[in-house]
Image (cartoon, rainbow, N blue to C red; front, side, top):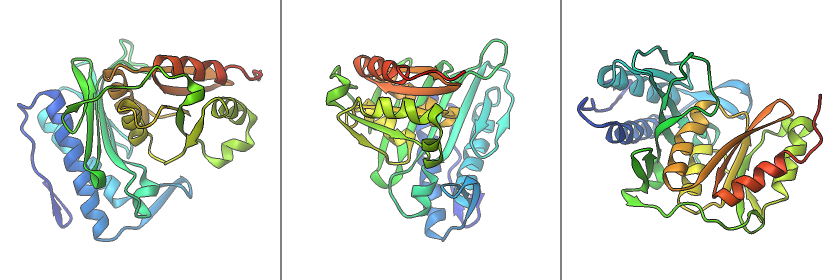
Length: 279
């Protein structure tokens, strides 16, 4: 396949799902990096920090084309607008460039991510859908996390130990909240309650990169509200395949997504739900 001046390989349909996912995120990430090297402009989506580039679109177009050829019966859902109905009861969820603001400004903290989820029986959206596998590739660090229901989580092919049972008060928590939400008590109050429960905080701007590091123990835990499927399901699969825990709790009409060891996930959920509830 050719996208502008950059070409990417056609993948073998006989690859199993895990190997296909690994190949997809590697190729998409490298393609995005090549496009960036040629120079980029960004289009604003919802805010100055929520942007999309030609690299996002090129990488998603590549993944879309490969999946339609390699898994024609599966559905496809992409951040940049890809939507294909499937007949298999499974859907590939694509995030071609997670951390686009970082990517656009030259940071290495971004990735390509995919997940394979089960569709709900009635077809209704599920923010915490059953996920079969996830793959996350950070090109500039050359880190590939992958794992799922039938395969333990690995980082560059090596099995990872997973999140620890350390109490939340001794852990570093990764998180993200847009500044505008800090002016809204529906989000600001639960976020603050969870944030002050951890030993320290990190806010890097790529949820899937964060979740890979929760799975391998570099970060202690993670929480964020209102995550779309492509920001949650790839990392969720990997954290669970590493022996960690995940949860979604609803507070003041917002869904909060949590990952880490069971002790930290429970404590984060309790902290988020400890604030006054708005009608």
